[in-house]
Length: 577
Image (cartoon, rainbow, N blue to C red):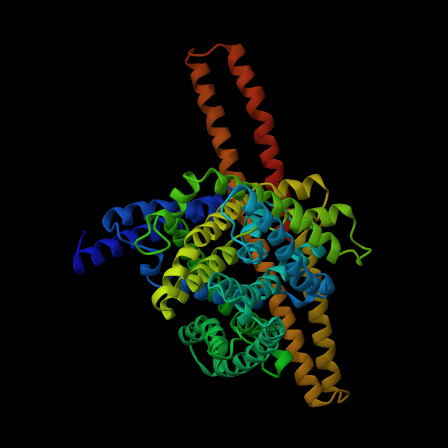
């Protein structure tokens, strides 16, 4: 075993190298329309094998605060989701989003948990109430990975469906975090410690509701403080620092209340983002949304990379120090029942729990048909939230043994030995299967079900922007004529300016995507033209016959013409903007 500084230096070099590799892999995955978590987990698995070879005694509890990193990731991802949430789009589907974030999360957790509880007793190690913890961990969705694939593939789902998925990404994940940490982790720990009588379900329900309410209040307070400070910050560097630290402030402030057994940090991060994105709602001047979102996009992406790499890493190391049987990969491969259970769990979550919850909570929306509900069911991709929650929950269960002594500690460690790797193994398999099966096919499903938006998004946004500009000009005229009170004028003017900014920011993204698409099509056309030119030279040199040359040309000419037409179509869509 390597010692001291030599080991630390080696590990840091490996981590730095693989993080850089992770960024490159994520970009390559985006280029080929593959959800970036898939190659990142595999990269982490490689890192785990390398680091275990450097230090065979590595365990999850020795990793530099994986649960802490997971919490930082949740804070940044949820804050960024709130910061980019379009309230204009959310109005189209507010009831569906709220139902999915509450009843939908609970239904998914209970349906999956009940089925897993019975299955583990039959085909694997009985894990009891921990099955419901697994169900709750797997209830959040990861539309971020899905949206990146849809956008890079040029697939645009209908506006209402997009607004539901976008809103669900914000509120569903935050609710799931509170449900896991506040409700299911304490229940599982009490069960494993053989003290179920210490759990009062009414108290837990009160703690859950308090976490929800306090999260909104703390999000408002943080948004007010940071929103007041940002305009006074001066240059972009200070604004970037303030923005990047806001999710940690909101989440950390919320988790200070954990001494009262409430955990509002996740929801505080979400609402801090929502309030800062809509500063007029809380009496603030419009904030620099473009720079704030740019900073948080990079910070959020970095933490996602770290979590998925560490998820892969932890598959190769023991979850419990000194117990090699809790190494997840070995645990899966040496226990056929666990492998079967993971596959069945994926089927349950993807094909049973999620569809049932979606169909139930959207039953009252008459504007949605079977196709829309089926698509929403399939688009519930699992990802970063589930990975982070698994790390937080497993670490909490393991660390509880540190407050026990004597025989109680020994009994508790024996009780968690089969449960902890089972939780981790099932979550890993379901997340990976979901990313592959759902992440790679949702775009094709949207096209097959005819749920894509055929309208030109750039033109649509331009019309909304121009209409809002006209409304602003009319407001200025009315104020100049003395028809509008100055306070009302200032408030409405700020709201309209903020809406115009959001629309222009959205328009810039759409135009950038179109230009990127044009560049890709142009490169492809040039490749075909170069091939055709090469075949022509070979024909002139007598190296290929006229018949072969004509066959090759008849194959390439239509492809070149099709690409040329597609390029012209995209260019026409950009010009009016």
